[in-house]
Amino acid sequence: MSSPVQIAPARGKLGILLVGLGAVATTTIAGVFAIRKGLATPIGSLTQMGTIRLGKRTEGRSPKINEFVPLADLGDIAFGGWDIFEEDCYAAARTAGVLENGQLDRVRDELEAIRPMPAVFDQRYVKRLQGPNVKKGKNKRDLAEQVIADIRAFKERHACDRLVMVWTGSTEVYMKEAPVHASVTCFERGLEQSDESIPSSMVYAYAALREGIPFANAAPNLTANVPALLELAARTGAPVAGNDMKTGQTLIKTIIAPGLKARLLGVRGWYSTNILGNRDGEVLDDPESFKTKEESKKSALDYIFQPHLYPELYKDLCHVVRINYYPPRGDNKEGWDNIDLIGWLGYPMQLKINFLCRDSILAAPIVVDSALFLDLAKRAGMSGIQEWLSFYFKAPMHAREVYPEHDLFIQLMKLKNTLRHMQGEELITHLGREYYD
Ligand SMILES: NC(=O)c1ccc[n+]([C@@H]2O[C@H](COP(=O)([O-])OP(=O)(O)OC[C@H]3O[C@@H](n4cnc5c(N)ncnc54)[C@H](O)[C@@H]3O)[C@@H](O)[C@H]2O)c1
Image (cartoon, rainbow, N blue to C red; front, side):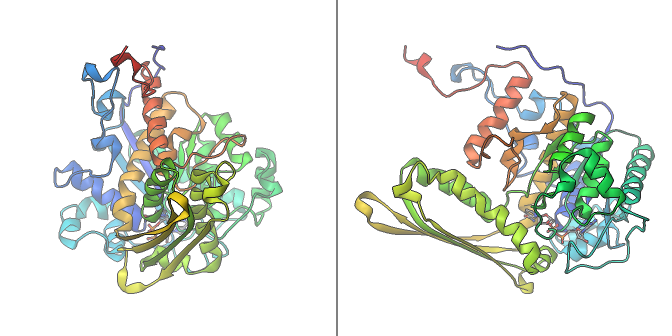
């Protein structure tokens, strides 16, 4: 057993700042309020419902995760955020149409009290949206300073001890790393010059990280995943996680694919298509935003199947991902997967998956978990990329010299072992020889 990591207690209030108060954000906030009142159960949340096995199987020690590590209590959370639309969180949740009106009405007062702060927004990065609640500034540096002022004012107004920021805003257009992202110095010069390669999401991430606030990215945008912002995170001791929450089709993909690979079943093709009718679907209808999402969704299979190690099984796999905007469906996405697989002696088989899911219902517990775990990481003195939170993301952030881990089961093991490590408990290797020797 190693000695436990020093973790500051979760004393006082945790402020969760959400950038983009749309479907995911309002479903998260309304859900937490309903759970706090005892009106609902936090299904899907590891921090609220998960347990962790400690020691040998014969010891029978499996405490709840939130009793094992000191996490913020849902009762001690204050929510705030930014959006380009002026509607309060109750109205925004009604617009999103995810939760039933009766359920929203039971937490109406709390939701109405959350009004979006004016956003940093430029339509160049999200082509399908336009809204009135937008900051003006002389350059991007000025906008970043305004966000920092918002953060400080929120912290004071709500008497928060600690803060976490999560980007729950729309998917921005596809972007590659540019010279302005190379270092904090280049980035700050770029802010001054309003460099085109600094989208709105990076302005928020910069503001959070400069304040030493943990930052998670629920969308596939590049955002904090550039050397400049990681350098800043290291300097201010801020943990970072992302990108793009793993919810519907990709969640299923990273559940099924490791199973096929474990049994050495070959895969020739994987065709995935979705229909989606919420605002996210509308934004993704723009080819440039879709490209960002597509890149994020497509990487998982390559890393799980490792075609370089198993060329007979997975080389030249044809992987196609489509998202079609179809308004009548709203947030209730439907995904179809057709998998062409091959077995013994090369005989072909097919697997079809039809997932009728609810996007934001799958996303909300992940927003809660990643915020609470990032706050824990901060109190444990961990900064920079938190690979143990890969479990929650479609395109997990990772050190440059290693490939990202996409297998959901390895990700969960990594997460739980990190918690065991924090508390000085033995890591679980699943070797299990001791029961038979
Ligand atoms: N729902 C899911 O299961 C899921 C899964 C993975 C990722 N995501 C991603 O999460 C994000 C949010 O999804 P959603 O369904 O809530 O979308 P949404 O369109 O309902 O909400 C996004 C909100 O962000 C706001 N916004 C956009 N740019 C902004 C800016 N610069 N500053 C402040 N606000 C801004 C929009 O006005 C909108 O209200 C999307 O990028 C989506 O791709 C969602």
